[in-house]
Image 1 (spheres, rainbow, N blue to C red):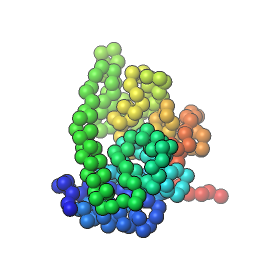
Image 2 (image 1 turned 30 degrees about the horizontal axis):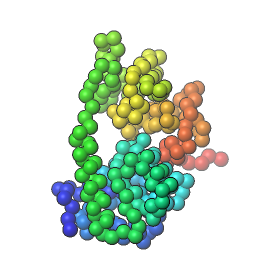
Image 3 (image 1 turned 45 degrees about the vertical axis):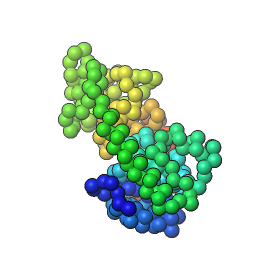
Image 4 (image 1 turned 180 degrees about the horizontal axis):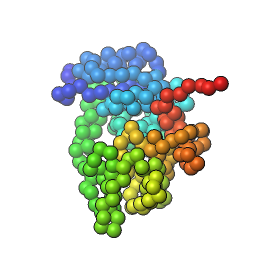
Length: 255
């Protein structure tokens, strides 16, 4: 049995039971998926996603740490746009209802067979590529777009105004509109969802810290469990976003 892909996709396995994780990795190798990585917690998974940007993640629903697999799935969907498939021993109504709202590309129910795993991965990768090929967003009046590697252009009163990423410090959502706040005092309000704009910004420079806020990482001067600080400005940070954000930081303890 071989993968239908010409190049081996990168697959992240998030599983805290070493035997199952190793078993899955061995199965994937048999299928021709050689480029795999294992993480045993949400924090490890987020670091792996930031570093290697997998094509697909296999998420065990019950993992150790502050977040379970479904909470991790929510973070991945909202901040990293990496498709994923759940692995679960729990097929009860409550678990499925929680999981389905994170829009996974499939489920693998334990105990699973090699055929179960192969079918779930092949279908997920096929759908991932189908969705990507059909999701081009046209540039329309008032929408930000990314014509250069260091900036966006925003159309305002018939004029395309250039905003460098380094000057785009924070973005705020309010209903169906978002406001882009620039460091020189300019503000732009456009009709667009926060996720749509987030998908257009480089993921290594901008992070969503709340359901209503995105910040430029380089502009952050401090962070605690309630707020991200951009100098004197305080922006609220959600619990799940806090864990995702701090997992990407290099930290040391000072006495």
